[in-house]
Image (tube, rainbow, N blue to C red; front, side):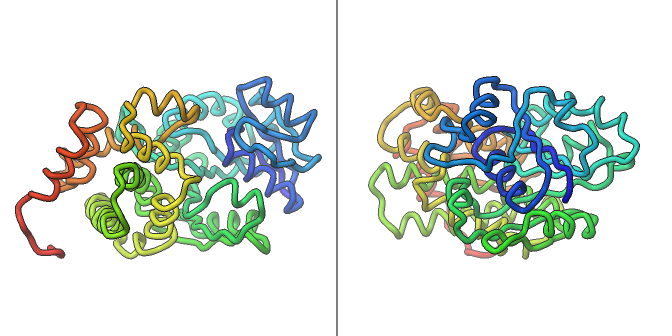
Length: 337
């Protein structure tokens, strides 16, 4: 049995915490919302994020991050991308006091908007690798609702220190949840973050009534953009053919369980971005990641026409159909270059 802290009481954090308890570990789930924490402890549910799902009675939640982190062997960050820095800052004084530093893991998917940093880079700024060791990233095709139902799921655990990735692989793995290891942290994080952007586009295409041809084209060319961007940052191109690349792209671009797809679908049907975000009630990572990647790609001189078209739709109020025509009428070029 390992003692583990899971930071974040959203759908994914709650499901992973519950899975770890079912795997026999001592888990403390931390969150800011007192009502959700009390509901988890008293009723063993988290109805806002996971309606109809009953949690293990041994899962305990609390709002005191110091107590949640006391003597843990592993800390799993499962909060929205732009909350990572704040939560890491809250955790830092408690982690620094520990004689044996815990393994740091994150399961978020995005790029920090203000800095354009990947999440492991944000964590390294606050909880340096020299002091805490390499971060492990968990990513891949995974709807929390399906994991809650114990449906077959396969993900990637990535770290520059493969022994750390292997530890996470063992802690989380069971007969319905399997992890593979990878040392390409950059590629795994980029694949997990940027697929949310393409899922917005896939949802828009669906909302406009486009068929399978358009959706397949969008996903394929979207993967090309993800690969170009990631490779420029030093990622292994093969990573984008794996679970955290193509796998995650497929599941996020084709499922009504995907927040990003649902948001795009509503945009395609004519709703404004403000209306969509208010209706969703949860973070739509692709909206913010698109802004960060749009500017980062310009800095890196990487061609990303789908990302740019979505930026113009989301942030410059460009007409969606005008944006699609602009994409289709760009200069002709080879498929691979």
